[in-house]
Image (cartoon, rainbow, N blue to C red):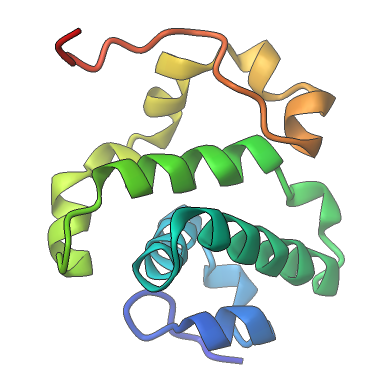
Length: 137
C-alpha cells in the first residue's frame, strides 16, 4: 500500500486501492476528487470517482462509510471552484472550507437530519437549504 496521501497519490493508486486507508482522510478525498476533475469532464469524473470510492470501501469491508450525497456534493463544489491549471496547493489554500471546515460548509446547504438520512447516503440528493454565496442574481 502507498502510505502517502496527498500529492503523491494518483488516480491509478486510488482505483487499485493501493492506499493506506488509515491515512485516507477528508483532505485526501478532496484531493483525489480534484485529480479526477482535472483529468475528466464533470460527468465522467463523478462516475469514475464514485465507482472507485465504492470499490475501495467494499475492499476494506467498510461499505457503511460510503455516502453518495457527500461524495457527489464535494465533487460538484470542487468542480465549481477549480481554476484552469491551478496547482493543488493553490486550490487548497483558496478553499479551506472544503477541507478544514467541511462540516460548516455542509451545514450551509444541508440540515443534519436530511444529509444523514438513508436516502442521502444511498443516492445524491439536492440540498434542503439555500446557501447565500454572495452571488449576484
